[in-house]
Length: 103
Image (cartoon, rainbow, N blue to C red):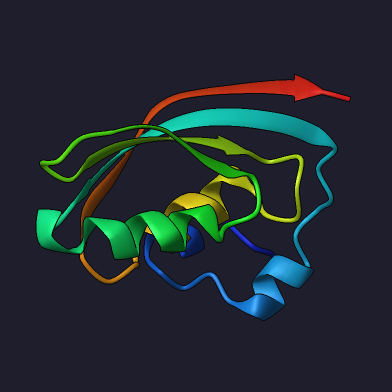
């Protein structure tokens, strides 16, 4: 079975499907609005900073973060966004804008 975006959307995107996905030479940049629990903001910030290609552009004391993702690293924008949304103490991670440039 070839990988399909519906697999990703339904949480069925596996390592096998990712390995068989076509190679994409497109560099992408995205901005993501993340809402985290304010009492765990430092832990969420540290976890996001541990993602290759992720940079926290803005943050406030209420748990809102603006994160810039760059897909020129090992992970795609979708993988990084999913990783952030599944982090403990993250309430939501919303894609705000996305741009791509073919190499």
